[in-house]
Structure formats: structure tokens, C-alpha cells
Image (cartoon, rainbow, N blue to C red; front, side, top):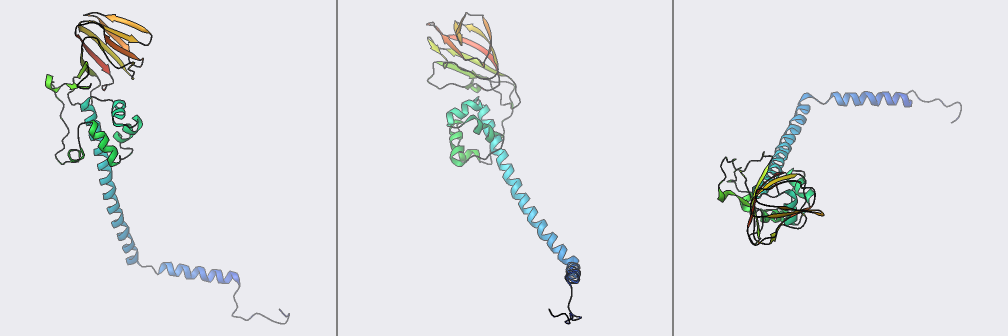
Length: 244
């Protein structure tokens, strides 16, 4: 630029331009009236309410699924481990579903309900009611934990209570029968032989119990019950946790 050239009076410096633009921005912000703000608030409130309602409905459905599966499993007398094994899932999956950490896919839910003796129609029926705890449990109310063709009958005394802390079994062993090889689960078991004889094999140790004898075992140790005789053996036992 030639030395004798002077900037015109209308030319603004960068600093002056910045101040002017800042004033314009403030004026633009001030031009938003109360009505505009109110409209924005109303729209946000409407969206939040709708999203909240949908979210609450989804959470309620998840809670129903987890709660109902838990009730059905307890009514069968199954542990999460046993339900997982029978339905082809992992113990972690069953636990997460019951605690509503995940929502099961339809095929997964159908597999679980098949094992628990239910179906999708009944499961989602409006007639679903939480069973009430019973004081008296009659013979027909006992839950058979083993398969119908098994030579060992394990009938659980279950009163539909979700808060019980103790399981109780009435066990019948046909002649020359035994439980699964090396059962193991957390908890403890106490029982009394009320008829016949029973052999309890705990890891590498073997114990013979006669009528009137009782046992106390830590069930985390692999164990097997064997009736080695040609007569029926009967046992009554209590165990923790409440499921088998």
C-alpha cells in the first residue's frame, strides 16, 4: 500500500468488527421472546412424558418376565443351574433374565417356558396371578424333581413362598438305584434314613447308613446316593439353597 494512502473513515478494525458482531448476537438472543421459550419447553415436556411412559412400560414388561420366570422355576423346584441345563442356556443367562438385566429373545423364552411347563400364551395372559404361600402342603402338592421314569423320586415340599430359606425333600429310592453321579452345588444338606439302607459316596469316601441314621454333608463336595439293596429306601432331608 502506498505510504500516502489513508484508510477511509468507514473501514473498521478487526477489534471493532468483533465488538459489533457481539452486540448483534446479544440483540438476536434478546429478540427471542417468552412465547418462543414457552413453546420450546412445551415441546420438550411432551417428548419427555412420552419417552418416560414408553420407558416405564418397557421396564414393567421386563420386570414381569423376570419375576414370572423366577416364580415358575421355584414352583418346579429347579435351581438356575438345572433350568439352564434343561433349556440349553447358561446359568449366567438365566440369572440375568430373572434379574431383568436382559430381555430374552422369543425363541429363548419359549425354550425356558417349555422346560417350566408353560407357553407364551399363558405366560403373557392377563389372568396370570402370583401364587399365594400355603401353610398346608398335601401329597398332591409335592413337586417331583426327577423324571417320571426315574428309579429315584425326589419330592419337594413347596408352598409357593418366594421368601423361604430352606428346601425339604421326601426321597424314595427303588431297589438298586442311585442319583446322578457326583452331584455338587453350593449349600448343605441334612437327612435321616426312615426306611432301608443308603450308601453316600462323597468324593473318594463311602458311608453306609441304616434306618434311623442321619447325615450332614457339605453339598459343594461331589456326592452320590446309592440304594444297594433289593428293598425300597426312604429318606427325608432338608437343604440349602431352597432349589435343587
